Amino acid sequence: MGTTQLESVPEPKYWHLKTVLTEALDSEFSVGEILPNERDLAARFGVARATLRQALEQLELEGRLQRRRGVGTTVAPPRMGVAVGSEEHIWPSAADDAWQSTDCTVALPPAAVADLLETERDEKVHTVRRSRVTHGQPVAAELLYIPASSVPDLSAIDAPSGTARARAVIRELQHLELEGQDQAVELGSVSAEDAKELDRLPGAPVLVVTTRFYADARTAAVSVATYRADTCRLTFGATGGVEIHHDPERHAS
Amino acid sequence: MGTTQLESVPEPKYWHLKTVLTEALDSEFSVGEILPNERDLAARFGVARATLRQALEQLELEGRLQRRRGVGTTVAPPRMGVAVGSEEHIWPSAADDAWQSTDCTVALPPAAVADLLETERDEKVHTVRRSRVTHGQPVAAELLYIPASSVPDLSAIDAPSGTARARAVIRELQHLELEGQDQAVELGSVSAEDAKELDRLPGAPVLVVTTRFYADARTAAVSVATYRADTCRLTFGATGGVEIHHDPERHAS
Image (cartoon, rainbow over all chains, first blue to last red; front, side):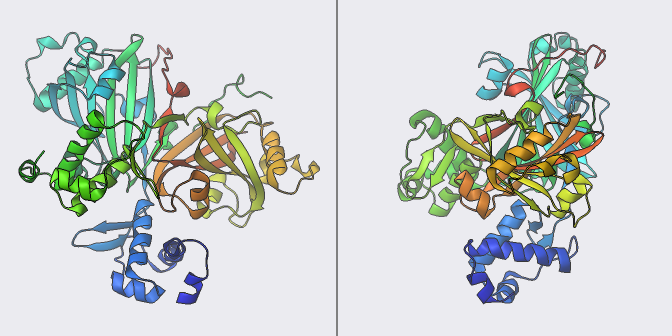
Protein backbone atom coordinates (compact mmCIF):
# COMPACT_ATOMS: atom_id res chain seq x y z
CA MET A 1 0.00 0.00 0.00
CA GLY A 2 2.07 2.92 -1.24
CA THR A 3 1.52 6.64 -1.10
CA THR A 4 0.29 6.86 -4.68
CA GLN A 5 -2.76 4.74 -4.09
CA LEU A 6 -3.79 6.70 -1.02
CA GLU A 7 -3.49 9.97 -2.92
CA SER A 8 -5.53 8.99 -5.93
CA VAL A 9 -8.89 8.45 -4.17
CA PRO A 10 -11.59 11.09 -3.82
CA GLU A 11 -12.47 10.16 -0.21
CA PRO A 12 -10.68 11.85 2.68
CA LYS A 13 -7.24 10.28 3.00
CA TYR A 14 -7.80 8.99 6.51
CA TRP A 15 -10.98 7.28 5.39
CA HIS A 16 -9.22 5.24 2.77
CA LEU A 17 -6.38 4.59 5.22
CA LYS A 18 -8.99 3.29 7.65
CA THR A 19 -10.16 0.74 5.07
CA VAL A 20 -6.59 -0.35 4.44
CA LEU A 21 -5.91 -0.58 8.17
CA THR A 22 -9.09 -2.63 8.69
CA GLU A 23 -7.90 -5.14 6.15
CA ALA A 24 -4.50 -5.27 7.87
CA LEU A 25 -6.20 -5.83 11.24
CA ASP A 26 -8.21 -8.70 9.78
CA SER A 27 -5.30 -10.40 8.09
CA GLU A 28 -2.19 -9.67 10.16
CA PHE A 29 -3.19 -8.99 13.75
CA SER A 30 -4.98 -10.96 16.42
CA VAL A 31 -7.19 -9.71 19.25
CA GLY A 32 -5.21 -8.06 22.04
CA GLU A 33 -2.10 -7.58 19.91
CA ILE A 34 -0.34 -4.24 20.30
CA LEU A 35 -0.06 -2.19 17.10
CA PRO A 36 3.30 -0.71 16.01
CA ASN A 37 3.79 2.88 17.17
CA GLU A 38 2.30 5.79 15.22
CA ARG A 39 5.61 6.75 13.64
CA ASP A 40 6.16 3.27 12.20
CA LEU A 41 2.55 2.91 11.06
CA ALA A 42 2.58 6.33 9.36
CA ALA A 43 5.79 5.39 7.56
CA ARG A 44 4.44 2.02 6.47
CA PHE A 45 1.31 3.51 4.90
CA GLY A 46 3.02 6.64 3.62
CA VAL A 47 0.74 9.10 5.45
CA ALA A 48 1.22 11.99 7.83
CA ARG A 49 0.91 11.29 11.55
CA ALA A 50 -2.22 13.48 11.71
CA THR A 51 -3.90 11.38 8.99
CA LEU A 52 -2.95 8.19 10.80
CA ARG A 53 -4.35 9.51 14.07
CA GLN A 54 -7.68 10.35 12.43
CA ALA A 55 -7.94 6.83 11.05
CA LEU A 56 -7.08 5.32 14.43
CA GLU A 57 -9.74 7.47 16.07
CA GLN A 58 -12.35 6.17 13.59
CA LEU A 59 -11.35 2.59 14.25
CA GLU A 60 -11.63 3.24 17.97
CA LEU A 61 -15.16 4.65 17.46
CA GLU A 62 -16.06 1.51 15.54
CA GLY A 63 -14.76 -0.72 18.30
CA ARG A 64 -11.91 -2.20 16.27
CA LEU A 65 -9.11 -0.68 18.35
CA GLN A 66 -8.64 0.13 21.99
CA ARG A 67 -6.28 2.84 23.13
CA ARG A 68 -5.22 2.59 26.73
CA ARG A 69 -2.78 4.73 28.64
CA GLY A 70 0.50 2.98 29.27
CA VAL A 71 -0.41 0.07 27.01
CA GLY A 72 -0.73 1.62 23.58
CA THR A 73 -3.15 0.72 20.83
CA THR A 74 -4.40 -2.86 20.79
CA VAL A 75 -6.75 -4.83 18.56
CA ALA A 76 -10.12 -4.95 20.31
CA PRO A 77 -12.13 -8.14 20.79
CA PRO A 78 -15.55 -8.15 19.09
CA ARG A 79 -18.13 -6.10 20.98
CA MET A 80 -20.29 -7.94 23.49
CA GLY A 81 -24.00 -8.16 22.81
CA VAL A 82 -25.68 -6.76 25.92
CA ALA A 83 -29.42 -7.38 26.18
CA VAL A 84 -31.25 -4.17 26.95
CA GLY A 85 -34.72 -4.34 25.47
CA SER A 86 -36.36 -7.11 27.41
CA GLU A 87 -37.97 -6.69 30.76
CA GLU A 88 -36.02 -9.50 32.38
CA HIS A 89 -32.78 -7.62 31.78
CA ILE A 90 -33.71 -4.24 33.07
CA TRP A 91 -36.67 -4.31 35.45
CA PRO A 92 -34.89 -4.24 38.79
CA SER A 93 -34.91 -7.57 40.55
CA ALA A 94 -33.19 -8.56 43.76
CA ALA A 95 -32.30 -11.91 42.18
CA ASP A 96 -30.49 -10.44 39.19
CA ASP A 97 -26.75 -11.11 39.37
CA ALA A 98 -25.91 -8.91 36.37
CA TRP A 99 -26.89 -5.72 38.21
CA GLN A 100 -25.39 -4.76 41.53
CA SER A 101 -26.88 -2.02 43.66
CA THR A 102 -24.16 0.11 45.15
CA ASP A 103 -25.97 3.01 46.76
CA CYS A 104 -29.29 4.68 47.40
CA THR A 105 -30.02 8.29 48.24
CA VAL A 106 -33.04 10.58 48.24
CA ALA A 107 -32.34 13.41 45.84
CA LEU A 108 -33.76 15.83 43.30
CA PRO A 109 -33.73 14.13 39.88
CA PRO A 110 -32.62 16.02 36.75
CA ALA A 111 -35.48 18.11 35.36
CA ALA A 112 -35.83 15.81 32.33
CA VAL A 113 -36.28 12.80 34.63
CA ALA A 114 -38.83 14.64 36.79
CA ASP A 115 -40.81 15.35 33.62
CA LEU A 116 -40.78 11.65 32.68
CA LEU A 117 -41.81 10.67 36.21
CA GLU A 118 -44.49 13.36 36.19
CA THR A 119 -43.31 14.49 39.61
CA GLU A 120 -42.86 18.10 40.66
CA ARG A 121 -39.43 19.47 39.87
CA ASP A 122 -38.74 20.11 43.57
CA GLU A 123 -39.81 16.61 44.63
CA LYS A 124 -37.01 14.36 45.79
CA VAL A 125 -37.05 10.72 44.71
CA HIS A 126 -35.24 7.54 45.68
CA THR A 127 -32.14 7.27 43.54
CA VAL A 128 -30.57 3.83 43.37
CA ARG A 129 -27.13 3.51 41.83
CA ARG A 130 -26.50 0.18 40.13
CA SER A 131 -23.75 -1.22 38.00
CA ARG A 132 -23.96 -3.97 35.44
CA VAL A 133 -21.22 -6.50 34.90
CA THR A 134 -21.09 -8.88 31.93
CA HIS A 135 -18.41 -11.52 31.46
CA GLY A 136 -16.51 -9.98 34.37
CA GLN A 137 -16.41 -6.53 32.74
CA PRO A 138 -18.23 -3.39 33.88
CA VAL A 139 -20.57 -2.49 31.02
CA ALA A 140 -23.04 0.00 32.48
CA ALA A 141 -23.57 2.46 35.30
CA GLU A 142 -27.19 3.22 36.09
CA LEU A 143 -29.22 5.69 38.10
CA LEU A 144 -32.70 4.39 38.86
CA TYR A 145 -35.20 7.06 39.92
CA ILE A 146 -38.19 5.91 41.97
CA PRO A 147 -40.79 8.33 43.34
CA ALA A 148 -42.02 7.73 46.88
CA SER A 149 -45.48 6.90 45.49
CA SER A 150 -44.07 3.78 43.78
CA VAL A 151 -42.81 2.33 47.06
CA PRO A 152 -45.49 3.40 49.54
CA ASP A 153 -44.57 0.85 52.22
CA LEU A 154 -40.91 1.75 52.32
CA SER A 155 -41.06 3.89 55.45
CA ALA A 156 -41.03 0.78 57.60
CA ILE A 157 -37.44 0.07 56.61
CA ASP A 158 -34.73 1.75 58.62
CA ALA A 159 -31.56 1.52 56.49
CA PRO A 160 -31.07 5.19 55.59
CA SER A 161 -28.74 4.79 52.62
CA GLY A 162 -26.18 2.52 51.00
CA THR A 163 -26.51 -0.98 49.60
CA ALA A 164 -28.99 -2.24 52.20
CA ARG A 165 -31.30 0.67 51.47
CA ALA A 166 -30.96 0.08 47.71
CA ARG A 167 -31.99 -3.54 48.13
CA ALA A 168 -34.95 -2.52 50.28
CA VAL A 169 -36.15 -0.02 47.67
CA ILE A 170 -35.86 -2.57 44.87
CA ARG A 171 -37.69 -5.18 46.93
CA GLU A 172 -40.53 -2.72 47.40
CA LEU A 173 -40.53 -1.79 43.72
CA GLN A 174 -40.96 -5.48 42.92
CA HIS A 175 -44.41 -5.35 44.47
CA LEU A 176 -45.58 -3.35 41.47
CA GLU A 177 -46.74 -5.23 38.45
CA LEU A 178 -44.80 -3.99 35.44
CA GLU A 179 -47.19 -3.13 32.62
CA GLY A 180 -44.78 -1.99 29.97
CA GLN A 181 -41.75 0.09 29.23
CA ASP A 182 -40.36 2.32 26.57
CA GLN A 183 -36.77 3.13 25.89
CA ALA A 184 -34.56 5.59 24.11
CA VAL A 185 -30.92 5.23 23.13
CA GLU A 186 -28.69 8.17 22.42
CA LEU A 187 -25.06 9.15 22.26
CA GLY A 188 -23.52 10.78 25.32
CA SER A 189 -20.21 11.34 27.02
CA VAL A 190 -19.30 9.64 30.26
CA SER A 191 -19.28 11.67 33.49
CA ALA A 192 -16.23 11.68 35.75
CA GLU A 193 -18.07 9.51 38.31
CA ASP A 194 -19.30 6.91 35.80
CA ALA A 195 -15.93 6.96 34.04
CA LYS A 196 -14.22 5.56 37.12
CA GLU A 197 -16.79 2.79 37.44
CA LEU A 198 -16.61 1.90 33.74
CA ASP A 199 -12.83 2.13 33.50
CA ARG A 200 -12.94 4.88 30.88
CA LEU A 201 -11.57 8.39 30.64
CA PRO A 202 -14.15 11.10 31.46
CA GLY A 203 -15.82 12.34 28.30
CA ALA A 204 -15.45 9.09 26.34
CA PRO A 205 -18.46 8.37 24.10
CA VAL A 206 -21.14 6.21 25.71
CA LEU A 207 -24.60 4.95 24.82
CA VAL A 208 -27.21 6.35 27.18
CA VAL A 209 -30.33 4.20 27.57
CA THR A 210 -33.31 5.88 29.20
CA THR A 211 -36.09 3.48 30.23
CA ARG A 212 -39.50 4.44 31.48
CA PHE A 213 -41.31 1.71 33.43
CA TYR A 214 -45.10 1.70 33.63
CA ALA A 215 -47.20 0.24 36.42
CA ASP A 216 -50.69 1.12 37.64
CA ALA A 217 -51.13 3.08 34.40
CA ARG A 218 -48.43 5.60 35.28
CA THR A 219 -44.63 5.94 35.25
CA ALA A 220 -43.35 3.91 38.19
CA ALA A 221 -39.63 4.45 37.69
CA VAL A 222 -37.09 5.84 35.27
CA SER A 223 -33.67 4.35 34.62
CA VAL A 224 -30.81 6.25 33.00
CA ALA A 225 -28.06 3.76 32.18
CA THR A 226 -24.71 4.62 30.64
CA TYR A 227 -23.25 1.78 28.56
CA ARG A 228 -19.66 1.59 27.36
CA ALA A 229 -19.80 2.29 23.64
CA ASP A 230 -16.42 0.75 22.93
CA THR A 231 -17.17 -2.76 24.17
CA CYS A 232 -20.98 -3.03 23.96
CA ARG A 233 -23.52 -3.67 21.27
CA LEU A 234 -26.98 -3.14 22.78
CA THR A 235 -29.44 -5.83 21.74
CA PHE A 236 -33.21 -5.61 21.61
CA GLY A 237 -35.34 -8.70 21.20
CA ALA A 238 -35.20 -12.01 23.01
CA THR A 239 -31.88 -12.32 24.90
CA GLY A 240 -29.97 -10.90 21.97
CA GLY A 241 -30.56 -13.98 19.90
CA VAL A 242 -33.32 -15.30 17.72
CA GLU A 243 -36.79 -14.06 18.55
CA ILE A 244 -39.60 -15.59 16.60
CA HIS A 245 -43.15 -14.94 17.66
CA HIS A 246 -46.19 -15.71 15.61
CA ASP A 247 -48.98 -13.21 15.26
CA PRO A 248 -51.04 -13.99 12.18
CA GLU A 249 -52.87 -10.67 12.29
CA ARG A 250 -49.73 -8.70 11.58
CA HIS A 251 -48.58 -8.23 8.03
CA ALA A 252 -50.82 -10.81 6.50
CA SER A 253 -50.74 -9.86 2.85
CA MET B 1 -17.31 31.83 37.08
CA GLY B 2 -13.66 32.76 37.60
CA THR B 3 -10.48 30.82 37.18
CA THR B 4 -10.17 29.98 40.84
CA GLN B 5 -13.32 27.95 40.99
CA LEU B 6 -12.38 25.93 37.93
CA GLU B 7 -9.00 25.09 39.42
CA SER B 8 -10.23 23.91 42.79
CA VAL B 9 -12.24 20.88 41.61
CA PRO B 10 -10.86 17.34 41.40
CA GLU B 11 -12.59 16.54 38.07
CA PRO B 12 -10.80 17.24 34.79
CA LYS B 13 -10.99 20.95 34.12
CA TYR B 14 -12.91 20.61 30.87
CA TRP B 15 -15.51 18.51 32.62
CA HIS B 16 -16.30 21.17 35.14
CA LEU B 17 -16.19 23.77 32.37
CA LYS B 18 -18.73 21.65 30.51
CA THR B 19 -21.13 21.85 33.46
CA VAL B 20 -20.67 25.61 33.65
CA LEU B 21 -21.19 25.95 29.90
CA THR B 22 -24.32 23.79 30.06
CA GLU B 23 -25.80 26.15 32.64
CA ALA B 24 -24.89 29.13 30.46
CA LEU B 25 -26.53 27.44 27.45
CA ASP B 26 -29.71 26.89 29.46
CA SER B 27 -29.91 30.40 30.84
CA GLU B 28 -28.37 32.73 28.26
CA PHE B 29 -28.66 31.20 24.82
CA SER B 30 -31.53 30.07 22.67
CA VAL B 31 -31.66 27.27 20.09
CA GLY B 32 -29.82 28.16 16.90
CA GLU B 33 -27.88 31.01 18.47
CA ILE B 34 -24.23 31.26 17.49
CA LEU B 35 -21.78 31.03 20.40
CA PRO B 36 -18.99 33.61 20.81
CA ASN B 37 -15.71 32.54 19.25
CA GLU B 38 -13.31 30.25 21.10
CA ARG B 39 -10.95 33.04 22.07
CA ASP B 40 -13.72 35.06 23.75
CA LEU B 41 -15.24 32.02 25.44
CA ALA B 42 -11.85 30.87 26.76
CA ALA B 43 -11.23 34.35 28.16
CA ARG B 44 -14.66 34.55 29.75
CA PHE B 45 -14.26 31.27 31.63
CA GLY B 46 -10.56 31.73 32.32
CA VAL B 47 -9.44 28.50 30.64
CA ALA B 48 -6.96 27.55 27.93
CA ARG B 49 -8.27 27.16 24.37
CA ALA B 50 -7.46 23.43 24.50
CA THR B 51 -9.62 22.99 27.61
CA LEU B 52 -12.44 24.93 26.01
CA ARG B 53 -12.25 22.82 22.88
CA GLN B 54 -12.49 19.60 24.90
CA ALA B 55 -15.60 20.88 26.66
CA LEU B 56 -17.17 21.94 23.34
CA GLU B 57 -16.46 18.48 21.93
CA GLN B 58 -18.24 16.87 24.88
CA LEU B 59 -21.24 19.12 24.44
CA GLU B 60 -21.31 18.23 20.77
CA LEU B 61 -21.27 14.50 21.67
CA GLU B 62 -24.20 15.11 24.00
CA GLY B 63 -26.16 16.90 21.30
CA ARG B 64 -26.13 20.30 23.00
CA LEU B 65 -23.99 22.04 20.39
CA GLN B 66 -23.61 21.80 16.64
CA ARG B 67 -20.44 22.77 14.89
CA ARG B 68 -20.79 23.50 11.23
CA ARG B 69 -18.22 24.69 8.77
CA GLY B 70 -18.66 28.31 7.83
CA VAL B 71 -21.32 28.85 10.49
CA GLY B 72 -19.51 28.27 13.75
CA THR B 73 -20.84 26.69 16.90
CA THR B 74 -24.57 26.96 17.48
CA VAL B 75 -26.92 25.81 20.23
CA ALA B 76 -28.58 22.60 19.04
CA PRO B 77 -32.30 21.98 19.19
CA PRO B 78 -33.37 19.02 21.37
CA ARG B 79 -32.74 15.68 19.70
CA MET B 80 -35.61 14.18 17.73
CA GLY B 81 -37.11 10.95 18.98
CA VAL B 82 -36.92 8.55 16.03
CA ALA B 83 -38.93 5.35 16.40
CA VAL B 84 -36.81 2.33 15.61
CA GLY B 85 -38.02 -0.63 17.59
CA SER B 86 -41.48 -1.21 16.19
CA GLU B 87 -42.19 -3.19 13.08
CA GLU B 88 -44.26 -0.46 11.46
CA HIS B 89 -41.21 1.81 11.39
CA ILE B 90 -38.66 -0.49 9.93
CA TRP B 91 -40.22 -3.40 8.04
CA PRO B 92 -39.99 -2.13 4.48
CA SER B 93 -43.29 -1.00 3.10
CA ALA B 94 -44.03 0.64 -0.21
CA ALA B 95 -46.51 2.92 1.53
CA ASP B 96 -44.05 4.30 4.07
CA ASP B 97 -43.28 7.94 3.41
CA ALA B 98 -40.51 8.16 6.01
CA TRP B 99 -38.24 5.84 4.04
CA GLN B 100 -37.29 6.50 0.45
CA SER B 101 -35.65 3.86 -1.70
CA THR B 102 -32.90 5.36 -3.78
CA ASP B 103 -31.16 2.41 -5.38
CA CYS B 104 -30.99 -1.34 -5.67
CA THR B 105 -28.09 -3.51 -6.74
CA VAL B 106 -27.13 -7.16 -6.54
CA ALA B 107 -23.92 -7.39 -4.55
CA LEU B 108 -21.86 -9.39 -2.07
CA PRO B 109 -22.89 -8.37 1.45
CA PRO B 110 -20.27 -7.80 4.17
CA ALA B 111 -19.23 -11.09 5.78
CA ALA B 112 -21.02 -10.21 9.03
CA VAL B 113 -24.28 -9.66 7.13
CA ALA B 114 -23.89 -12.94 5.20
CA ASP B 115 -23.52 -14.71 8.54
CA LEU B 116 -26.75 -13.15 9.83
CA LEU B 117 -28.56 -14.04 6.60
CA GLU B 118 -27.09 -17.54 6.75
CA THR B 119 -26.12 -17.23 3.10
CA GLU B 120 -22.81 -18.35 1.65
CA ARG B 121 -20.15 -15.67 1.77
CA ASP B 122 -19.85 -15.67 -2.03
CA GLU B 123 -23.61 -15.37 -2.57
CA LYS B 124 -24.78 -12.03 -3.91
CA VAL B 125 -27.97 -10.55 -2.48
CA HIS B 126 -30.36 -7.75 -3.38
CA THR B 127 -29.12 -4.59 -1.72
CA VAL B 128 -31.65 -1.78 -1.43
CA ARG B 129 -30.42 1.63 -0.42
CA ARG B 130 -32.96 3.69 1.50
CA SER B 131 -32.91 6.96 3.33
CA ARG B 132 -35.12 8.09 6.15
CA VAL B 133 -36.33 11.64 6.52
CA THR B 134 -38.03 12.98 9.66
CA HIS B 135 -39.36 16.52 9.97
CA GLY B 136 -37.65 17.35 6.68
CA GLN B 137 -34.23 16.27 7.93
CA PRO B 138 -32.23 13.26 6.77
CA VAL B 139 -31.85 11.04 9.85
CA ALA B 140 -30.71 7.67 8.53
CA ALA B 141 -29.08 5.93 5.59
CA GLU B 142 -29.87 2.24 5.29
CA LEU B 143 -28.66 -0.76 3.37
CA LEU B 144 -31.26 -3.51 3.26
CA TYR B 145 -29.93 -6.95 2.33
CA ILE B 146 -32.40 -9.43 0.87
CA PRO B 147 -31.37 -12.89 -0.33
CA ALA B 148 -32.91 -14.14 -3.57
CA SER B 149 -34.76 -16.84 -1.60
CA SER B 150 -36.83 -14.16 0.18
CA VAL B 151 -38.16 -12.75 -3.11
CA PRO B 152 -38.56 -15.89 -5.25
CA ASP B 153 -40.94 -14.30 -7.78
CA LEU B 154 -38.76 -11.31 -8.50
CA SER B 155 -37.31 -12.61 -11.77
CA ALA B 156 -40.49 -11.58 -13.59
CA ILE B 157 -39.63 -7.92 -13.10
CA ASP B 158 -37.39 -6.30 -15.62
CA ALA B 159 -36.08 -3.10 -13.96
CA PRO B 160 -32.40 -4.00 -13.53
CA SER B 161 -31.45 -1.40 -10.91
CA GLY B 162 -32.32 1.98 -9.47
CA THR B 163 -35.44 3.18 -7.70
CA ALA B 164 -37.92 1.15 -9.76
CA ARG B 165 -36.02 -2.02 -8.97
CA ALA B 166 -35.88 -1.11 -5.28
CA ARG B 167 -39.63 -0.68 -5.21
CA ALA B 168 -40.13 -3.99 -6.96
CA VAL B 169 -37.90 -5.82 -4.46
CA ILE B 170 -39.72 -4.27 -1.50
CA ARG B 171 -43.10 -5.13 -3.00
CA GLU B 172 -41.98 -8.74 -3.28
CA LEU B 173 -40.59 -8.74 0.25
CA GLN B 174 -44.01 -7.60 1.46
CA HIS B 175 -45.41 -10.97 0.44
CA LEU B 176 -43.59 -12.52 3.37
CA GLU B 177 -45.30 -12.54 6.70
CA LEU B 178 -42.99 -10.98 9.25
CA GLU B 179 -42.69 -13.22 12.31
CA GLY B 180 -40.33 -11.19 14.42
CA GLN B 181 -37.18 -9.16 14.51
CA ASP B 182 -34.24 -8.50 16.68
CA GLN B 183 -32.04 -5.47 16.74
CA ALA B 184 -28.68 -4.24 17.92
CA VAL B 185 -27.52 -0.67 18.39
CA GLU B 186 -23.88 0.29 18.46
CA LEU B 187 -21.58 3.24 17.97
CA GLY B 188 -19.98 3.71 14.58
CA SER B 189 -18.46 6.34 12.35
CA VAL B 190 -20.15 7.53 9.20
CA SER B 191 -18.77 6.42 5.82
CA ALA B 192 -17.96 8.97 3.14
CA GLU B 193 -21.00 7.90 1.13
CA ASP B 194 -23.48 8.05 4.03
CA ALA B 195 -21.91 11.28 5.26
CA LYS B 196 -23.00 13.07 2.10
CA GLU B 197 -26.55 11.79 2.45
CA LEU B 198 -26.74 12.67 6.15
CA ASP B 199 -25.08 16.07 5.78
CA ARG B 200 -22.22 15.12 8.12
CA LEU B 201 -18.45 15.05 7.80
CA PRO B 202 -17.07 11.55 7.11
CA GLY B 203 -16.07 9.85 10.34
CA ALA B 204 -18.62 11.64 12.55
CA PRO B 205 -20.08 9.39 15.26
CA VAL B 206 -23.31 7.63 14.30
CA LEU B 207 -25.64 5.05 15.81
CA VAL B 208 -25.69 1.88 13.74
CA VAL B 209 -28.88 -0.17 14.03
CA THR B 210 -28.72 -3.71 12.70
CA THR B 211 -32.10 -5.42 12.35
CA ARG B 212 -32.69 -9.04 11.52
CA PHE B 213 -36.16 -9.81 10.15
CA TYR B 214 -37.63 -13.29 10.51
CA ALA B 215 -40.17 -14.91 8.23
CA ASP B 216 -40.86 -18.56 7.46
CA ALA B 217 -38.76 -19.42 10.53
CA ARG B 218 -35.55 -18.03 8.99
CA THR B 219 -33.81 -14.69 8.44
CA ALA B 220 -35.62 -13.01 5.55
CA ALA B 221 -33.65 -9.77 5.42
CA VAL B 222 -31.06 -7.75 7.31
CA SER B 223 -31.05 -3.98 7.59
CA VAL B 224 -28.00 -1.94 8.56
CA ALA B 225 -29.11 1.63 9.21
CA THR B 226 -26.84 4.50 10.12
CA TYR B 227 -28.58 7.15 12.24
CA ARG B 228 -27.23 10.63 12.91
CA ALA B 229 -26.09 10.60 16.53
CA ASP B 230 -26.13 14.35 16.88
CA THR B 231 -29.80 14.92 16.10
CA CYS B 232 -31.45 11.58 16.91
CA ARG B 233 -32.59 9.77 20.00
CA LEU B 234 -33.64 6.26 18.97
CA THR B 235 -36.86 5.15 20.62
CA PHE B 236 -38.07 1.63 21.29
CA GLY B 237 -41.64 0.95 22.30
CA ALA B 238 -44.87 2.18 20.78
CA THR B 239 -44.18 5.14 18.46
CA GLY B 240 -41.74 6.66 20.91
CA GLY B 241 -44.47 7.55 23.33
CA VAL B 242 -46.37 5.81 26.07
CA GLU B 243 -46.66 2.08 25.70
CA ILE B 244 -48.81 0.31 28.20
CA HIS B 245 -49.72 -3.29 27.58
CA HIS B 246 -51.26 -5.60 30.11
CA ASP B 247 -49.97 -9.09 30.56
CA PRO B 248 -51.04 -10.43 33.95
CA GLU B 249 -48.72 -13.42 33.75
CA ARG B 250 -45.61 -11.28 33.81
CA HIS B 251 -44.21 -10.11 37.10
CA ALA B 252 -47.22 -11.01 39.16
CA SER B 253 -45.82 -10.88 42.68
